Image (cartoon, rainbow, N blue to C red; front, side, top):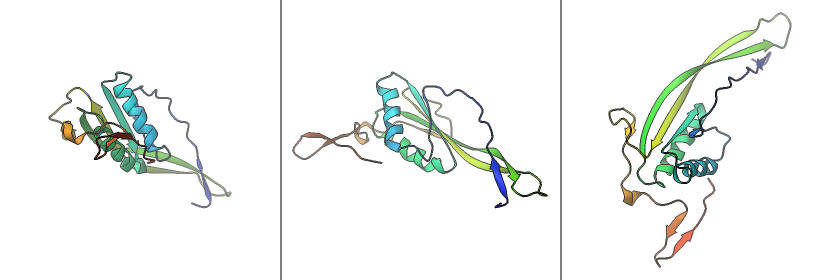
Length: 153
């Protein structure tokens, strides 16, 4: 493919809901977690949706695990699928024809809700027990003192 150049396709302008978070490989985990917890705890959202494709899926799963261990009573529903992405390639040399390739990209959607979700869904997970959830950035040491700390993810 060194004799071809990929043509950037115009992206569809699909609006993103305030409670939808699209995770990318470039974004910082801490920023996604902060935004999600702000939506659920301060802005009064009862539901958030994490979406990712391709290489961002493993980061999304880690973010989801951290969120549900910081907020009590979150129901989770996970769904997976795939999407076909068509790439257009223009030749850099004369005599070659333009190419079109199709990639099958995996995708994941994780929904967190304070209200019960469809418990019959294959991807449903009930809330964690309260003793397994620790508030964001709080740690109690042996002396009973609550210390705040930050972890760069």
